[in-house]
Length: 256
Image 1: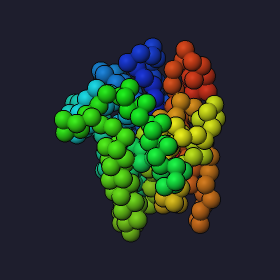
Image 2: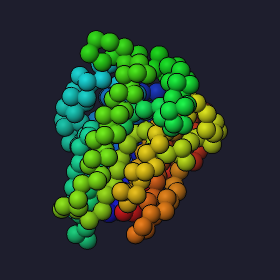
Image 3: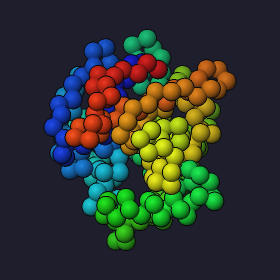
């Protein structure tokens, strides 16, 4: 299957007009498309089916739980399939069945292990203060994000370890990155990196392809596993004013 991948378009502030990639069979939106949600309407009537996993900015200033349900409704109204701890099995033009597993994933701040967790959570507080989200009437702070992330991780692990039943290959879509290998080279591996990457390296072998966003840079690397490598791809656009969009590939297609 040929998947077009876009993420971190930030259409709440960026001036950008996404376009379909020739030959793509499905469009994957890996989060941070529009903090205001309005630009999701641009994907109504897209020539291929559209799958969307929310980014952290889709929850800016909102209640996380209530917004997930509301965002699903908005996506449905535009003909977009939102995945949040969901799987979708699609069949490509050659009859191959692809399981697409999707969740925002969030950050559990364990990128550097238990010993680095407290420092990572202190660094993450800066981003949470900017986000200004809530959950159940309480601030969605680093502790709340960690709890949400651990629940997402548990769901993802259980789903990926399911015996193969009705699919041939697996694609994982998360907004947060699955490995420190996806760290932004401008900043390297520091405590704040744990707000962008998780240590999900042990789950990578269960996927044929892992697509993510969140880092405002591009990545395309392979992780060795029995039966062939797992390909990890990020095609974030980011903010053009900061030069982040220069490496973005607007019509990138990933083969599964």
